[in-house]
Image (cartoon, rainbow, N blue to C red; front, side, top):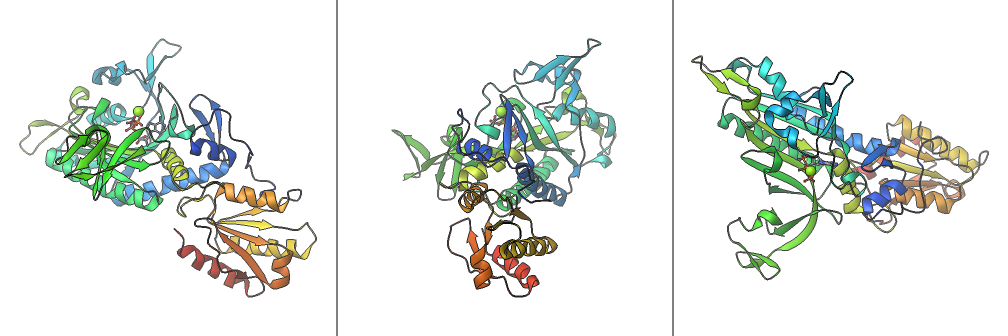
Length: 429
Ligand code: ATP
Ligand code: MG
């Protein structure tokens, strides 16, 4: 049921007093998310729709490389974390249960997945294997900030590949590069894949997927066919820094703030050795399993999309992420012909499997309805009022680019309306 008169979409005229990032301001103002505490956020229905659109894109691409979806717990025994040494990490939440057992809240799932693989995988015949889940991560971030960009609890898709040797690992890694590239393209974001730094995960190679945006905490240098994190740029061939400027082969590079939305790591045997994940090869010799891990944060992708495409009126979603395809506005009270016409349009679009949010609120004027529609940023806005009934045409506004769109016939066959909206949709970014 997506009638605004009964839908939970608490829009606000003012952003939260402490908000600096565009995505923080707009996602709260548009009624997508609400804060509960420092780095703790609730996704409201429209926001969750966007989050789940990203989740679905990721799921399809993971399934396409043969990864198998499962679910591991957030609450875990501390023991495997002691074995890998990661119990020492400050971001890791530690707790004790009523019996005095030490537990942790997982910040990522290498320990859990390797614990299982150590028990399950026996022989080279059990490999290769790729598993993944969408699961909550808990991290005691030193500085939660910028709305849902950096929170202490967030959903991550993390996948893990298990191979018999380095060559196998490279293959699984290459499959993920392909899947991640497709995921990023499908989200509609502007993005770059850059060489990563291996950081706390330990490992032998990594890439980061970066989305340029004003609230980004990292900086990337960009040139023709070249992108790198500023911290590692100077190790690329041909790159030098002259004063404040970066050059590649003498050509100036541009600098842009960006946020990391995905991260893939070659772990090698960093986790399989301490946790005893090994297999027997053809000659019966015991070998360590070679691993890689791959993370991506749907919330960051959502916020980065808000940052990249917002304008002075509000959010402007890429069509693959929009909470609804159509925001239908009726101007006219119950009992009027315009209300009747809008109801018919709503039911027709719904029957035609088009995601439509219908602003049927009685006591809200057209100005406020339009402002809310711009703020929420659905790709198409359809307006049905007196003028539409008189002229037989529904006014269409395309959110992105704001160029005038051809109006749709109200008086023709209603199925024609679904087809016309579908056609308009095909042409949208
Ligand atoms: P950062 O350097 O920004 O702290 P990270 O290196 O800690 O990120 P990973 O551990 O590689 O991040 O996590 C994989 C993905 O999970 C990130 O690419 C990002 O999309 C998401 N992510 C990580 N930390 C957060 C957070 N605090 N809030 C929301 N999403 C996060
Ligand atoms: Mg981090």
